[in-house]
Image (cartoon, rainbow, N blue to C red; front, side):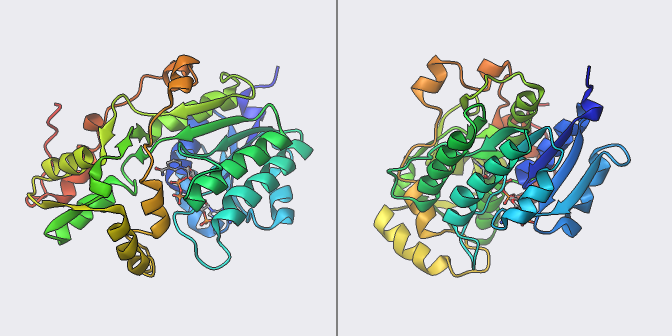
Length: 321
Ligand SMILES: NC(=O)c1ccc[n+]([C@@H]2O[C@H](COP(=O)([O-])OP(=O)(O)OC[C@H]3O[C@@H](n4cnc5c(N)ncnc54)[C@H](OP(=O)(O)O)[C@@H]3O)[C@@H](O)[C@H]2O)c1
């Protein structure tokens, strides 16, 4: 029988926020890991996550099919974690989330590898957000290439390098107020990136239902306003919370989108018009973290450990301890 040490997993986007947690989880389970990214030179920090020679990085761009074919050669499982938060140059949502997903899934099937694809809650062909529409098109392309593919849709993810809590804590440090986009009523179900990585590694192990679509959320649902209040309480700062109606937020985002790393884009405003929570259908059918036997981690367990640096005193006290 083949042991995990004989199995190769190619992880597209393995150098990203979610990717590093997935690579760590796969290393613990002794898989050989090939990280496929446009800048493998920047992925050197992943090697210490495994034993000598267990992790290596190769150059691949999901917009260039020949590089994808080379990256999946001899792989047993292919994971797609490629992501962009905003469009720049040739990195368009359609090219990365729809076209790229199709190229990766087809190449994986041609190499006789199983496919694990990461999409997002909110993927919807009818959405007003391009991100959400192209995520839906990506899921459809993956399903067309492989009816056995396991697809994960996480809600917003938290963890030390996340883009959500860190971003708003940084804004609160600099600014007298935080915006409540659309009034702050959008519901979210933040999920720990480590739990998402465990679910993905379980799918690689073959523990997920073949051909299933899982929705991954944390143990609690919050409104956007409650999350802003939580950030402020955690970093012990008092700031105004200013409701910004969607049309006003959109105008502001039209300007902010031109920053090198935009604080807000018009498409992100569109995304915030819909709740980002696990659907009733997924819960009923146990296509969730709990359905995989994973107990979701609460934000209070993890977030204070990395937001402490935004406090005035800069001292970390674990309130849960
Ligand atoms: N973070 C969240 O809260 C969240 C929530 C729900 C769903 N997701 C989904 O989870 C996935 C991973 O997200 P993340 O937060 O880890 O993103 P991330 O930190 O931005 O990482 C994205 C990864 O994709 C790679 N990449 C980007 N363009 C590429 C291309 N054209 N070809 C090959 N690789 C490319 C990047 O490496 P290079 O730049 O070196 O190529 C990087 O490794 C995405 O599909 C995202 O939509 C994330």
